[in-house]
Length: 158
Image (cartoon, rainbow, N blue to C red; front, side, top):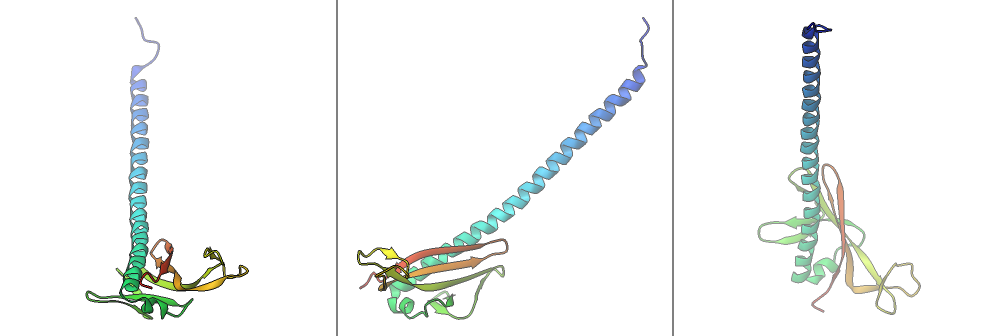
């Protein structure tokens, strides 16, 4: 029985289709790996930025625990930096640079309360500053993002 077409031409088409499919798969795998590596790197820097902000707040809590007057003596609404050495924790005006890529700072703000002792905005009628509490904002600027960690510190020894 005679074949209606030449089978040699079909084999060449099959090879070209197979190679094309393999090339598309290889490109897709390459793009996936590249995206994974970029995402992993970005995730690691974001996590480090977040952890450094949390650590900054914990250092401020330790400073507060040691001496509330250090926190109370910081000029309100002024950017300050942490001075961390193996033996002491303190506050300084010199920028704190961590691993050459991260800068950590903090700002102490007044905390206002109403007559019910609830935290309110300074513009709220009847709001008065709380002498024994401060709003703390720790900011860490990393290579890819900025994290701001806000919380309240109170004089727990009073």
